[in-house]
Amino acid sequence: MSADKSDWVLDRVLRQRAESMAEKPFLEVVGDRCESYRETYEAALRLAARLEQLGVGKGDTVVIMAPNSFEAVHAWIAANMLGAIDVTINTAYRGQLLEHALNMAQARIILLDEEFLPVLRDSEAKLPQMETAVHFRTHGNNYEAAPPQFERIALRPLWEAPERPLSNATGQADFRETASVIYTSGTTGPAKGVMMPHAQTHYLAQQTIAGLRLREDDVFYCFHPLFHMAGKFMGIYATMLAGGKIVLDARFAAEHWLERVRQYGATVGLAHGPMIEMIFDQPAGPNDRDNPMRRILACPFPKHIALEFERRFDLRGYEVWGMTEINTPCWTPYDEPVRLGSCGKIMEDAVDFQIVDPETDEPVPDGETGEFVVRHKEPWTLMQGYMGMPEKTNETWRNLWFHTGDMGYRDTEGYIYFVDRFKDRIRRRAENISSYDIEVVAATHPAIAECAALGVASEFVSDDDIKLCAVLADGAALEPAALIEFLVEGLPYYMVPRYIEFLDALPRTPTNKIKKAEMRAEGITENTWDRQAAGVSVRQIVEAARQQKGSGQ
Figure (cartoon, rainbow, N blue to C red):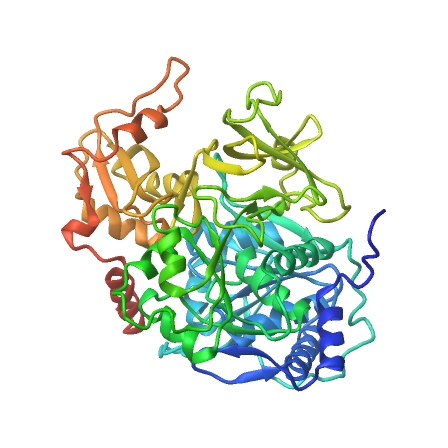
């Protein structure tokens, strides 16, 4: 029988917490203050009134572009209070990626840290529907330049007093309606906006509570950004639903991880595989076990250090498998020891799951690698499609199953093992990256005739660095460092390739498809240029460009 989902709505959950545990600490931002449940609820109400004053109503999209902060959390909740759709986007977006995300959302209003106003201004001419940019300054923002002048988009400060109180529309969202849109990496096209109904986001929080046994006395340390499902729904929403406290950090820093855990009394956290490796690579100390954390959610939990990581920090690691479209249907059983390399067992009460031949969709035997396919047993607990991309939605659904594109196998005891990605996707430091997005920007350089981006093994397990193979136009000359500077202008920092290799031609099949599998297998060659070895820093390029714009040069 289907569960009663009438209260599976974010602001309804927060209102209940504000009534039942008003003064209990809920949201603390590292280096800033701590808010109680009541204070967070009231702050979100005030911001909802501000949005309502600006014309936001039920069904509208509200784009948010800000680092982890009180403002980002309040804006997300406020949008949902009005029955609007929260679209929190990657703060590294710029150029074509930013324009695609905003135009796909058909947003009239964006709330953003003033640091990103110049990026928005650069794309203004290609954002025909954008009307208003509501700007604010988050804690720790040291951006000093004056706001740029816009031709058409109106600039409004966040905290102009509302002209009227919040209407009775607040809190009227239905669990079946879209709550949030999260952009995920495309493969043969641009990023796709996953439309997540309220019930799905609530269900993901419930799964996290069950998988980690979250309680009211837990303190969850979270540095994952709010444009990912992990930080937003598995961190903040799950903590809210459990009645605990969330500590939000603006960024991940391996050298400060243990310090933060101790400083804030964190009992639970999450980290992707490369982050686990970076933490483990920090110098070991005699008192590493002296910390309050007892559970950490990992995806993956690197098998070559998993057991030693648990011993060193005296905690348990729980590996999961999932994706934004379908939540996390596979968890390490809470009371069982780590099964190295496994992401756990399927939550059979939540989903039907099969491993199939990706060519025939026929199930494969245990032990044989195939594609993971899923369908949910509870209505409204998986995505309702890709925003504005019905053809992409249809591609993922075939023969009554959602096709994930992830490959792996199941052993005879029911443990699931992720092996590889079937689709042409790059995984770098917890970010899923579309080779298409890199190629589109690189191809706009006048010296590039054609190119292909691909992932090559990094120093971390289950992680990639990016290699761009390019063919120069006839008679053109281009230095790798100059190409990197060009790419920095149009790509988020995490998409900028580490490696560049110029080829006479890209290898192709008889049907003219690029042989990326062959190129990945070749990896780094003697002709591959390495940005890191050459000392070319993306951060320094970005900072130099920012200073140049600030000086008006």
